[in-house]
Image 1 (cartoon, rainbow, N blue to C red):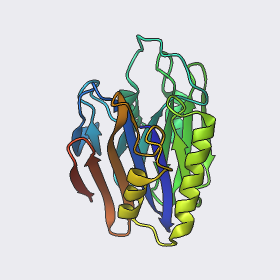
Image 2 (cartoon, helix red, strand yellow):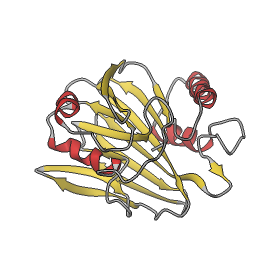
Image 3 (cartoon, rainbow, N blue to C red):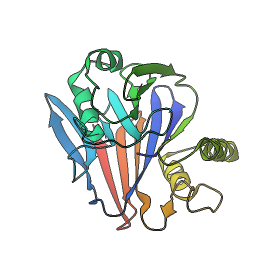
Image 4 (cartoon, one colour):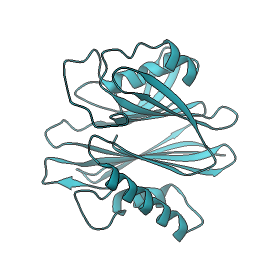
Length: 238
């Protein structure tokens, strides 16, 4: 939930990938599987502590990914009304991103950035930001690759460095696929393990998993790599 990239790969096709950076004392997430929210099938890895998730997809309609923090680093002031991971799942009770942004009550939730991909006919990429007081939603350019890094872990200089690494990686190879994106998320950086994409800060906070969701002509696929156990899980979502 701390580094996210979006890569358009064709007409109404994309790859969305997330590195989850977490405290080492937090319970490991359960591998992704299908859940039912209302009448909708939703696929996601499940956080064992709060019961929510940081990344989820319904397949052809919506794909979401969460980052901790808004525009600036904030002070952690619990208790909060609901975990951000459970808030993400509440999205699937709404019809679209703009309805969720206007009707859902975010008051009492810790600040976050939520990436929302709507891909029914054409792809729309929304960036929804809650700073603890106000909610804003922006429509991004879905034709361009995008990268986000959580402001709770990375300062502006490091965020700019990561954007540079991403752009350099894009220039190295014109053809990109899910496996190549996941390799970038695991090995991208400059050798500084504190701030590389797969990070480790003295074993206290570290990258625990990489999740990638690809929508293609043949369907939607999710790959989940548990970094701690070195296990890979794959789901095909019809």
